[in-house]
Length: 496
Image 1: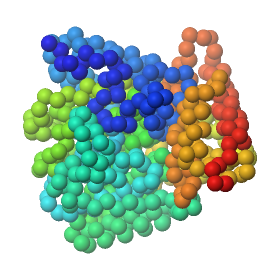
Image 2: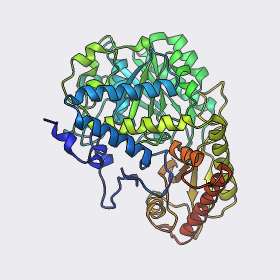
Image 3: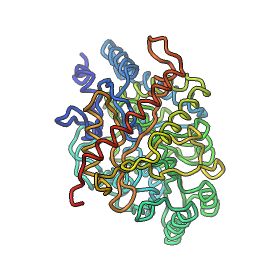
Image 4: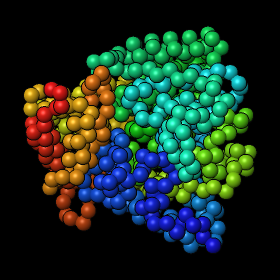
């Protein structure tokens, strides 16, 4: 007899096995304005998450059909996840000795990374989270080994802020490092490096182990700290310092992942931001030297990860797991893998051409507007100081909006306009939700994602050329700038 979970509809399964972020609101969407149905809105919110493409849904449907028709769903699930890992390994150019853990979301990766570092001994841990205001909303709690939602992926109730593993959480202190000033300006690389360095030196001098986050593309495009600082810290302090690359946006060049792993750094990414799979899906890439020796730190993770989620080479960990299979996470990863594979099938020069066209259109259509302003939200990334980005031009732009009196719109007003752009008008646009870029400053984000690149590159059944499809895309961005200008002019910020 089939497990009852497999009898549920696909849309229900795709929103299962995570937390309340996937629960549909009265609007029919999750809190990010996306869902698990294919939409016609132009997908420009991949810096948060996107609704799935038809290709992703077809992949998930096929996987679910295979599971339902099997007399041994667990064996089929294991095979499907081998396929997911194979695509990640192939497309991201990972060596065979890299371990790949799959998680229900990027937030859950934080807990696993902490457990791997903290499981080696019983010392105190200082978790240095760089760009804390520009990474996942649940990052700080998860980085402290705490539950960040009232529901855990296994479906059980939890208490926000309570420990996933009592011993691990009690030993962990989180130190957030901002990458912006209070006014919202990006700090210089030297300033950020100095802050990170001081936090690490202080922690190690007090006998603590340190886990440092190197953010490789924040919600608005910031990379920090520099690779040079990381190299100096790890060389000087040896095993007292571990590093995890927060590449949750997945906006790194394929070669960058192995480059980081070769330096002994863990890397986490998602299949649901740039790569455009259904929300959410996380992965932790682990170099061979960080294979766990002490598994006590993993206690409590049974509510987050099942047997097949752990790397296939971690036999002892997997053998200690029960039969729980997270079908929702599996289907989301299968869907994401289809997007990853399709994106990298597009020739490099075509992907680059589309990214350049996106950049040009944003600069041309949004520059000089009175009520909609581009925010300096990315650095000119020096390939020697940072991991190489997926494109040489930015793929995420942050924009502030002003009301009819010229006052900046706050979070609530931007959320309302975000919703209007998403569901009203002849042309609909899904953008990245408002993000804080300073004290009382918020911005929406316009992001290029893999499914959109693939769609423009491959076209549909019409006879239009790539040049025509790119021109159409640029015109759509022009329409977006007009819509945003019109909406801002008709808005009056409360309290202004």
